[in-house]
Amino acid sequence: MRRRPTRTLAALTAIGALTLTGCGTEPGGPAGRPSATAGAPRTITAQQVMRVTQPHEETGMTLLEGPVLDTDGTLLLVDVTAPAGKPKVIRVDLGKKTSRAVHTDDRGAYTSAQFSPYDGRLYLTDFAHGEIVSLAPGGGDRRTFFAGPVDGAPMNPDDLAFDQEGNLYISDSRGLTQGLEQGRVVRISRDGKKTTVLAENLAATNGISFDVEYRGLWISELTQNRISYLRLDAEGAVTARHTAIQVDGGLAETDSIAVDADGNLYQALHGRAAMLVYSKYGERLATIEVPARTKGVEMATNVAITPGGRKAYMTVSGPAGGYVYTFDALADGIRQSNGG
Image (cartoon, rainbow, N blue to C red; front, side, top):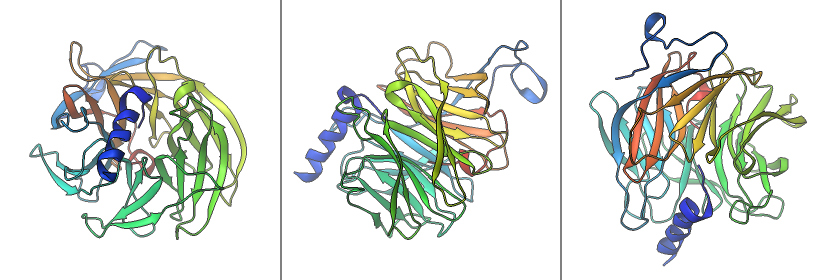
C-alpha cells in the first residue's frame, strides 16, 4: 500500500472514524513473450481480467492490494478502504471472472495478505490499528496474531514476508502521515511472542520481500523512491544495509515489491498504473503497463506470480474502480512473488 495523506491515509482515517463511531503481452519474441531491443528495457502490456470493486460511497474510493494465490489457484485480494460490512478480503475466480466475499469486519484496514508456511493460515496486516490478524485458509476463524507497540511505538504494518520457518517480517510505515523517516522493519516470531526491530529511520517502509536464497530482504521506501537491501545472518538479524536501486518514478512512488525465481524485482508504483522490473543487480529490465488510453486507474499496488509458472496478476486501482490485470512474468513465481 500507500499513499499520501490526502488520499488513502485520509480514507483510512475516515474508516477509523466510521468503525470507532486471459494473459497477454505485447507481440514479440518466442512463446508470446515481448521482444526488446538489446540492452533496452522491454515494455509489457498487461491485459484486464476483470473489475473487482467500485469506489465505496462511504470512503470515496477503493484500493485493491495483497494479491495471493491459494493452493487451488484462486486469487485472494484485500480492499484497503472497504467500509464496515463490505468485503475486505475477496476471492476471485479467474476462470469464471467472478468474485465473492471471504471476510469482512467493522474495523480492519487490511493492506496485505500472505499464507504462512508454518500453519497455512492467511495473515493480514491492519495498517490503521497496528495489528496482524489471521484467517483460516478458506476464510473465517479470525484471530489477532499480534497487537500492541514494538519498542514503545505503535506499528503501521504495511506489507509482510515470511521466512522459511514461518517468522514474520513487517514493513512498518511509521512517519508517513507526518512525512518523517520513522519507518521500520520488524521481525515477529512465528508464535507472536517476540518482536525485534531490524532496521529503523526508513522513509515510509512499504514493500518487503526476501531474495531467492533468503539471505536478505528487499524493501521499498515510498517517500524516497528507493529500494534498499538488508543483508541477514542465520538468525534473521540485519548485518548490512544499503540503497540498492534509486527508482526514477517522477510523480509516482515505490509501493509493494515482489521477487521471481530468477531474483528479478517487481516494483509497484503508487501514482502510475505500472510496475518496473529490475534485475538483482539493479538493471532495469521491463516496464509493465496497462493499455494506453486506459482511464480511471492511478496505481498498481502489488502482484502475484503463479508459483512454478509465469502468469502474473497485478492489482490496479483508481476512480474507475479496483481491477485485476494479467501479464507474463520474466521468470517463474515463488513464495516471494505470491502475496505480501
